[in-house]
Length: 543
Image (cartoon, rainbow, N blue to C red):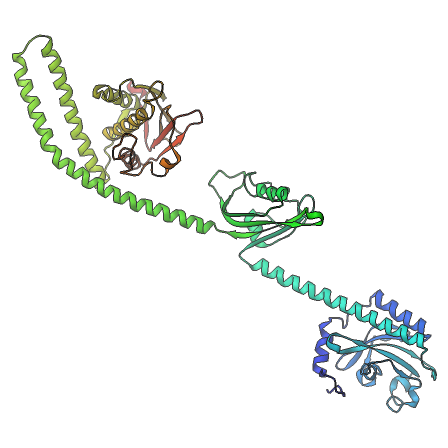
């Protein structure tokens, strides 16, 4: 349908604009009812209408005195009036050939007088009219005051329509943003007020905190399940400082969960929303859950560590094979020399004979032990084999103490055993476990020999999961932060200036026994090295 003028819009465009207001077929509203009542009163007419001209009808958002909600567009005087930029006045409809045979004029409505003002929407597109009607002719039309008032009331109608349109568009835009944020992988939450009640939280945020809808809930209540050094503390920091918090790989865990269990990691920003006077009126929290990325990095680091450990094992295997090959001959030769000494000893006599005999026996024992260590190491690195035998922990500690005293390498060392229960036993390779204790106690001595006293304490206790935990504790300066990173890495420098293979060998032996090894700095000074063994026995019956 043409608009019948030189206007820049088409009828299709006009109808599109009209329907964009979402006002057609809505219930009556007091504000529009009051406007038509006021228009009828000011213009002294029995009828007043807010008419919106649709494709086939004129629909009345508000009507006073007519008793209808719509009429066909074909008989609508308003369809003509809305095309006029000023007040459209027909003093007597029966005398106007355009309306003389209109059913609203000739029928029961008996309309005679009409005056209407355009309701103009965006871009100058007419939507309908605010009109007043009478059942008697009015040759004088409207007074200047009445015309001015009718124009003002028409502007008021459009203000209300524009307000509703703007509100509808705002609701639609808000809904679009809500859908966007709801479906986004990023989490987002807004809170305001003195207690920072949540105004909005998307699904990703609710999944992160493990809660249901938190709108209207104070942040302290909604986030109370988190530890103070996590999310709640960051909220407080931003609130108190009015400065944004930005964090990467921020750990979040619930109080009911042990450390490392169910922990999530997030990259996040908490931004203050400033109100009057620059005070913090609210907070915006946004970010992403990077737990999978964090775990992938951890897994990659563990894989690199395993690869490095394998490389070290390969090097150790080569070293053990070389040592076994190269040491077998001198150890055998040393054994032959000791046999010769024992053969010649009967020709000697006196106290010297006894001392030489004892020394030869000790030398023979150490040569045998060296051979056992080499064979055990070769089996471990080549085949991962652990010889299983049951031995008391007290015997192992005493054996290591004797070895250190005999070698004379740790003068002034005092090794104290604290075993619970006293007859605690372990199933494993005796030589290898001795080697672990020997390396740890020797390292402890190296750390404490420049301090007052050289006491090293060996604790051992049975655990609930049928394992044994051993702790070697010293009272030296502790372990530096730099040393922790490579503590159990083979060939890292040691305090004694050697290759530092001892702790790596300890780790390899412990892991081959199904256990784990770690170190701590003690709060009251010194360091402690812990390792577990997967099997234990109580040898009290054999005591």
